[in-house]
Length: 254
Image 1 (cartoon, rainbow, N blue to C red):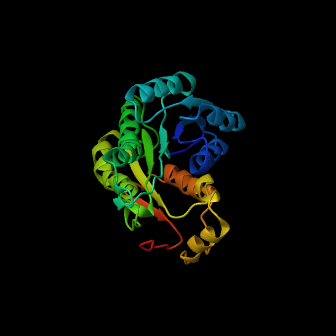
Image 2 (cartoon, rainbow, N blue to C red; image 1 turned 90 degrees about the vertical axis):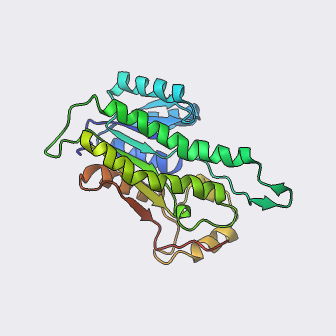
């Protein structure tokens, strides 16, 4: 799909991989909506790329519906939906203070898996109203964000791995279901990316993480995630698949 003049939304677009993707889509000529629970941070990115900032909590259907309506009024219904919103919470199933409270497990699933699914469904419903484009007759493309933790979750990542594993598992059946409408579904599973979260950890801990990455022997850059997202949008034959973006990393137990 040609990106120029398309309406695009990026959830979690106020920082990290989401912000990088919003910037790159804008550089390609898309009309970009930056969705985030942090509206002030979203406004900074939106102003930079001449897009719009939309406050959105992906755990709440009414918030997503309102956000999609705002996008439609400003840019038209989004043909490109990139889901980067999510949280990372590490905790052992049974630790020094006893078993993990089920509410903490539920929160990670609610945000990362159910939130992604909800935005994907509602965005797809809006795409159905659009005219198909090009010889492939595409109406839209949805790109979700999983993680290598979906495959090699570390100790303390049971909730996170479960949430990202769910996103991996959704990919093919969602692509098969939406194929009849000309809507593609893809997932990117990043490894260790140099986002604000990783920038907060001590230098020695960062070095230990990098040590496990075969090549390139460094953290991934948010722009590299964005480059892959852009290529997925532009390449109509990419559908129903999960692409690891990890430099051949395979996570150790801890």
